[in-house]
Length: 184
Image (tube, rainbow, N blue to C red; front, side, top):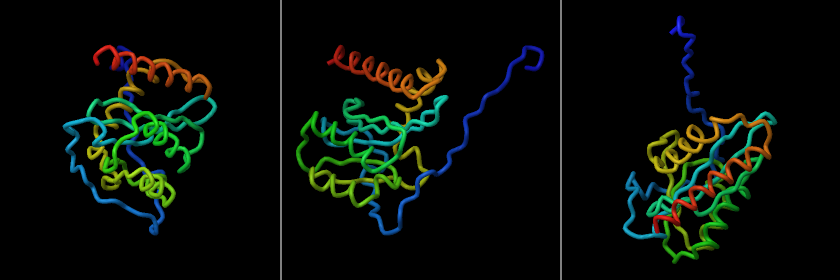
């Protein structure tokens, strides 16, 4: 490798960055890695991704329908707040208007365990489901989406500004929506 000038780039190990307050609600894991609902709008999943730019970090929250593996709502911001993940959920809900009883699966990040977020889910008639701390395989479909976004798209081109990142994420999302519409 030295003779060819090759350098191994390793992924950074997982690090917990948001910690819930112990008074916040933790929902049971209703999925237990069953990521294949039999119809749309039965199970949605969400998570957050950290996206590095030359100006600092951006954070992407998504909501995915596990039946179609389609992103229904996403929101990109430079701050991680409950309102930020709520905006992604509102977009998804307004797009689909699902029946009561839908399951939303996420990790136990402080945004998802907050009382405000659980109130939003309750108002929509959505049941919360959460995976264990640090168990990325319990939300594998969403993690796979983020892996593709980062390693197949975003990391191939430098991201000097937050605006550039927003445009690149929007372009990736548009391509996914086009492909989904083509196969419907």
